Length: 163
Image (cartoon, rainbow, N blue to C red; front, side, top):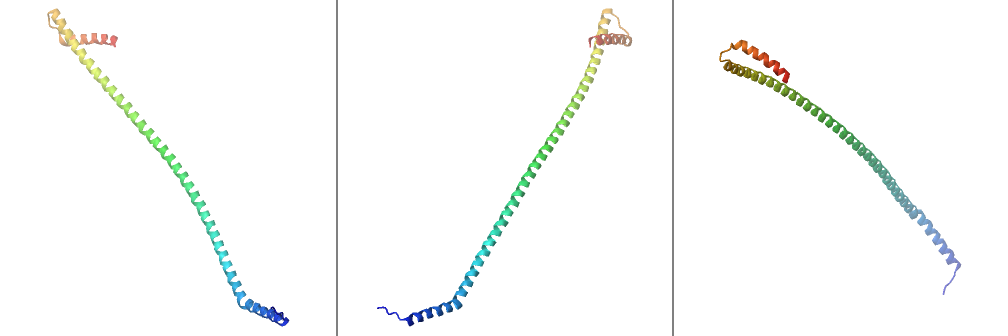
């Protein structure tokens, strides 16, 4: 059975109190200090992680901004390059058209010169043929220089009317 002796109860309470003071003095202080150190270490790691996260977000924003600027610069460069290419194309086209006009004008002048030369040659031949025909008709020989001048004058008048 249980025996309740008041001395045993007081002695047990005293033992528990001494044990509690001994543990508090030697063990609880160190455990509390270790737990506090661990809490501080965890908190500093959390603070460091938060700082690194903020830095990473800031770097991301900077890189995103730089990427946007690079895209804008590339679009501007592309626009300038297109404008320069269009301008170069127009200059080349204008130069080619000017060359073509000059070539056409030169060719036209050459054709006109050749035409005039051919007309003069044809007039001379017609004049000679007319003189030969007139000589045969008249059965006499005509004076070449004066008759040629007369035929040339006649053909010049006739040619001016037809042209």
